[in-house]
Each structure stands twice: as structure tokens, then as C-alpha cells.
Image 1 (cartoon, rainbow, N blue to C red):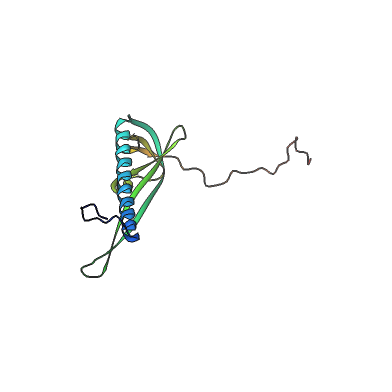
Image 2 (cartoon, rainbow, N blue to C red):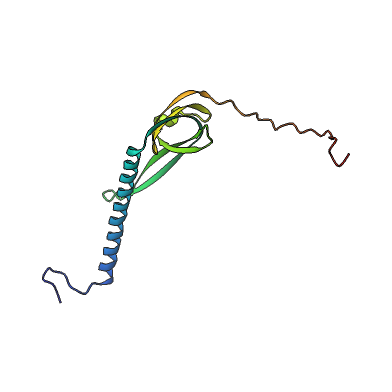
Length: 152
């Protein structure tokens, strides 16, 4: 029995499966867009802060994309890299922020200066110098017996 719109009321498994996959893709796209807009809105409503900080680590995440060219039948690869820097504040708290490739290249672990950020948005880092490197040598442990040592 039809509804007059060219649709039959008896859906086959293939039609239901295709509809479900299409719905999942659309819902995933909407959820990602809403999350992105939410983060953008939260960052815009956060105060701009400039604080003393040190660069404690850097990392990059490279994603490779494989594309099939239907015209030539060949494969095409592309990649994208996202750069991150972790800053430590005087209080000991740490914050990892996404930075541009240019900023990533200018930052070095151990740099100290003033970090400016808004929410999770990196705005800049004014380098003042580098932190004093920690001694590479382990502390010297005395083998001398003390008066309170029970082995005396």
C-alpha cells in the first residue's frame, strides 16, 4: 500500500540500513558543529589572561588522509598537522593549547615568559628567557654513619 508519494510502506533491509547510515552521518556532523560553536562561544566569553608561564612540552599530531581518485583509479594522500604546547604556571598548574605551526617553531621547551590566552584559545607568548636547567647529576648521598643510625 502506498501513500501516493512514490514510497512503498514495506521497506527492505537495504533501504533501512542506508537511511540509518545517512542519519548517523548527519547527526555526527551536527554534534561536531554544536560542540565547535560551544567552544568558540565559551572562549569568547572567557577573560583574556596574561600570566607568567614556562613551556614544558611540545607535541604534534599528524593525520594522513587517503583519497581514491575515481577518475584515474589512483590513490592520493594528504596530511595535516596540529601543533600543541604545554605551559606551566607559577602555581604548578599546566595548560595545553593548540598553536599555529609558526608559533610552534618559535617556542622551545624551557622558554619562560608571559602567556596570553582566552579560554582554550592561544593568543601569544612573550618570551623573557629560558629556565635554569636542572642539574643532570643525581644528589650526592653520604655514606657516612650518623649518630642516630642504628647500625653504629
